[in-house]
Length: 266
Image (cartoon, rainbow, N blue to C red; front, side):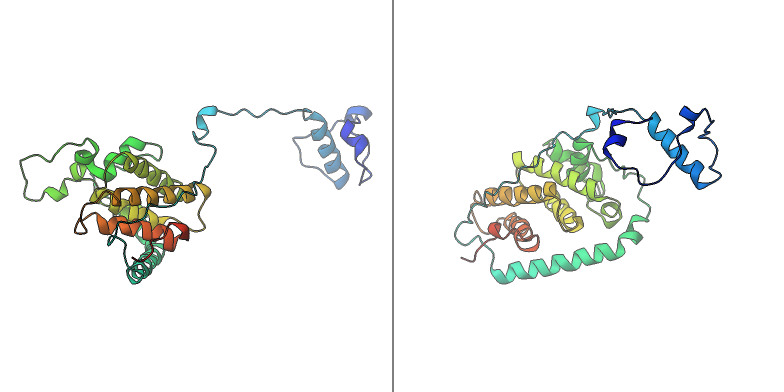
């Protein structure tokens, strides 16, 4: 019982010829009684293995995007007077860092908290359901709020979107954090900035673990570039979107070390 591999590799241990050639019965279903019998079982198992093994791969289970392209293109420069000060950026990074430490410290506690009956978290690959969940049906469907106002319309989270409560984001593993971040950035690429989007982007960035995977690295750069693009179209500094847009650029550049995207002081 000599294979090509056996002829190429020197024998390290003196093992008697396997039972196939000697006529001795080698039972693979019983534990070996001594070292010699163990080695004969290993020898027999190796002889039964095929020379070539082909893996059965289900293409449906492979991710759509197998290649990660990280664009090195920078952010668009802020209009005069729209760029935040370096002091403001440092303060935001400090606050963000503290929030990340708090989330990490209390993740186990919050992930164990019961969710309300109306909180039905989508599956990881349910992109459209996640967009509705985070942004709400009003934003997702681009429909204006109804004229009828209830006593507390903010509680109708299906319409206005579920906030990123700690009891929700603490349940997300890193794969889901990256997936949801990608879904929302894809949505942002084709639409304007809304408050629900900013809240979820901030929360997901706070849950994103370092060092970043290549996919996450590309995503956050895409987020910063899109934020700078929307900022260039703002008409005045009092626009309520300016601060959260600056914040997204600041965190990507200053906290996640994408320094080439950082805003410079005017």
